Length: 276
Image (cartoon, rainbow, N blue to C red):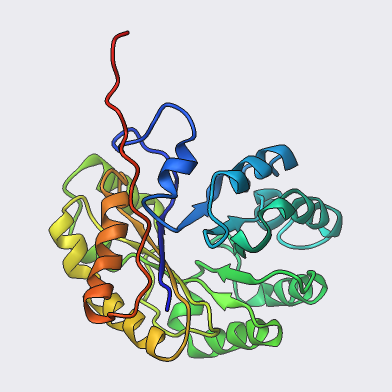
């Protein structure tokens, strides 16, 4: 029985990491990561080979499609670009847990035809997971049902970005204020469509508030595991300084209730920097 946890990045100034092979070190703390770097450009195949070399076979990448495909072309006329992207990430093999289709906030229910068409011709060798941010998908049951129908045709998952804890009270720091301006403020979603649910949870600067806010998610994950699902949970905070520790804490909290849960790897010890 496996639960995968991770962060939005594999390096951060506040984390204990070596000067080189940061992904390799990160992969001893967590067993999944959001690959946000691919949003800005398709990586070279050599770069992806290095990612694979630094991670265990059961490590999970959720790789975000480039913005050219999702935001600029809005999923239309992107067959060539999609093939190039999938070819580039091929070295990940089974580590490529899902292709993450993050859509802009302006992508509304009226655009579902473009998503349906994209998923129809997308190669079936890959698992797909979609993140939407338009309020209609969360506020209008009809719109949510239409999206679920489109995703269900190809076995794709809906990735919720849970900002409930972040917006539970007004921001108290620059990082929280910045997150308030940039993150979607939508209704919390707890429904999984597939055997591989993915949740992006964002807390606050306060570790205590972040932990208190995820109680519902712990129960949700325990239920999913009991149903035979294999969830992946990504832990965010406004500045992500504590995200690495929070990911492990979330896993251990679930493990206290699920004795058969496979453990996380043991973190590598990082030597402190020296002057010589």
